[in-house]
Image (cartoon, rainbow, N blue to C red; front, side):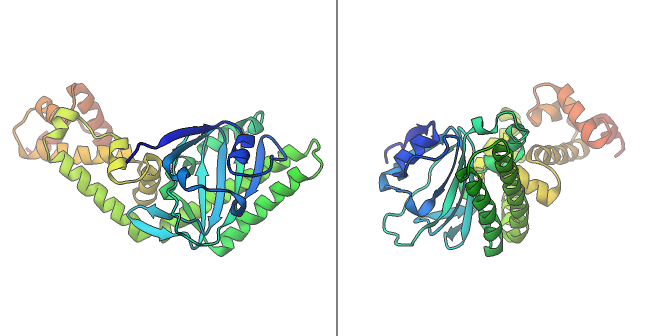
Length: 306
């Protein structure tokens, strides 16, 4: 299979032209009707990079979405959040005959200049989720989101005045806050899937800490773990925060300390040897992490067993 090419779209006007749409009414913000977008089969062979934000809600997409380890049809409202410079690809099913509907909200970063949202938009973690971690919304949730986008569209369709930009910015913020609420709901309602991911993570870490890899490669990287679980690093950390109250790095450190305690309490290895076995090049780093996590030094912990 040929390696997909990567195509960057720099402006909203360029996006409109590529997708067979009329020129946007505003160069920095646009809401487009998804049913009117042309999606050629060859688009499946392309990785896309946008220089602007793309928030979309779609129904009837002629594709399947893989969420964790499960597949879902696009028979309910599905939201995507794509940030500038994020690489994404959606594989199109050319045989599908489902009628598609929905919208895309395109926002160029220049539109956010000199507003608080220019910085706070980066705090919404779901912009770093992969396409396969989209937000599934209920009919009620979809109606709420649609009402907000209608307000945005109505505002930039109207005569622009000194209030227009701030009104649009506040509507975008409201949309983002609702999306965050809906994502938290999704983590709860998809509890079984999330616990399956947690169980796979636990096995992955247990196998790694029980192998010789840790002494030669050191602690596993968050990116590598997320890749093995087929989810994005940001999504994994959000999921773990919901389930355990800790992010991925903290979770890895906890498993490391468990292994360290096992070695300190059941073997005659020196603290330095335990540190090297656990992939630390410098025992001082191991000592510092252990004390931070347990309020004891490794020697104090070992002494408590004597």
